[in-house]
Image (cartoon, rainbow, N blue to C red; front, side, top):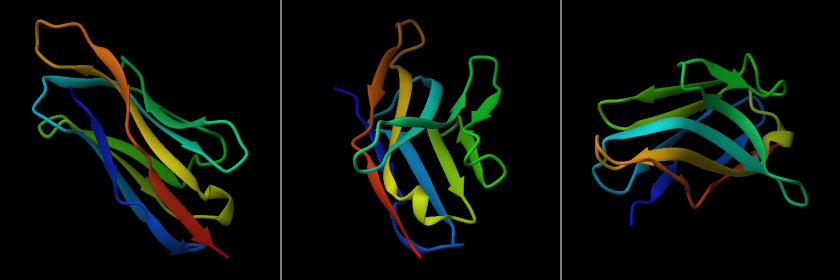
Length: 121
């Protein structure tokens, strides 16, 4: 079964940067409408950034201007560049995407296992 695998999390000081990556665990045709979510302790999971079917990228107000989501379709990988990190960004970050295994197959949405981001003050 295909999995989404995130990487790039870690511990960083406030004001620092991290880049998260998300890729499928095996060769697939395409990742559709990918998104990055995060869940802080005691809080609900929230959308951080997402790419629409039209190719537009939407951001949560709290990260707009500091985070940038991108994708490399040749690698079927999506990224989240996080700059000027604040302590309130501390959370587990999850990738979510509609995974299209073959060009002729329907997509199915998967979650990654999450990667911890900790921002110290």
